[in-house]
Length: 146
Image (cartoon, rainbow, N blue to C red; front, top):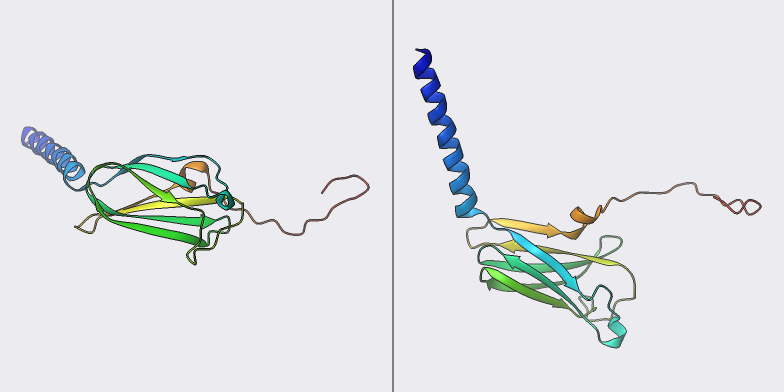
């Protein structure tokens, strides 16, 4: 009886490993190799930033750009792109095509397959992105400190 139970446990473990392997290979969409160039742009000088990335499977991709308050500033989408390396550009303009002021912006890339599987690469997930609120700040002019 004990031998049968051990055999069944081994079979179940093998099935679970096989399922995870097949599921990971058959349906997973990944966005990898994400970087942007240049690190700083001056929109008023006509500069733009290129966001580079790689897709593990064909997918429609949306680039969203946010300001430091997490307000959506710009968005651009591409119909289904093939698996492989790609680039989307942002010209430093908001959704009304106005040049944005010089400040910090961050972006997300979202990929969605024909089957509806979706993944988002959020740069703030990798850079900390923690938000803090500061209240009741007072400045001591005599000591030059908060």
